[in-house]
Image (cartoon, rainbow, N blue to C red):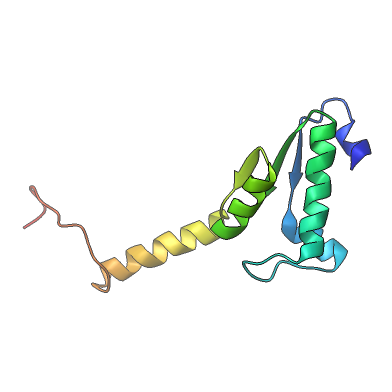
Length: 111
């Protein structure tokens, strides 16, 4: 990690915890990360700081985002586009079916 962080032109070390977890035998399977995965993530953070670079990480859950933000990461992604879109769209489809709360429409098209 130190060698990667020292490469001229590399500005950020960005962690993909799914890839890293799979590579070290501790895949991300839920909101809690394995302690060895968190330790490996911490090593990336230390290498970035030591080289004067920024650090970033992807997290699929808000709880994980809080943990890594408190570790000191500069950039934290809180969700994946596929998760966010699926959550949003399923809520909107439920509203369209009358299963959720819908906003009252007023004006020329609302009643």
